[in-house]
Length: 68
Image 1 (cartoon, rainbow, N blue to C red):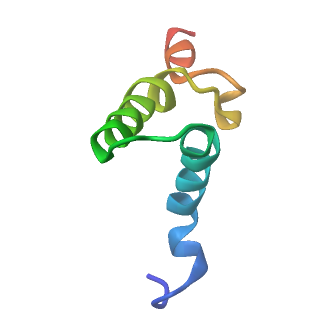
Image 2 (spheres, rainbow, N blue to C red; image 1 turned 180 degrees about the horizontal axis):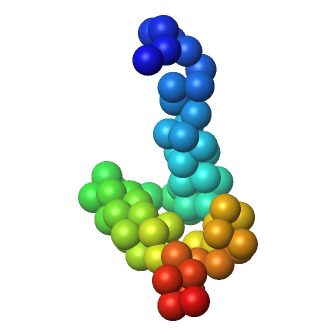
């Protein structure tokens, strides 16, 4: 385990939240917290985990990669 505050500990989480902000949150305005929460849930559950293409799997979406 690395020391407390080590920048590499949070690299994966920070990358995810940067992507979330860039692809979803900064693109629209939400009227309520519930609306924002719903949009974030749908983004993660539907788009990020199933449809979005990843460079680590040769720019396939996880669904397409599994079919391959």
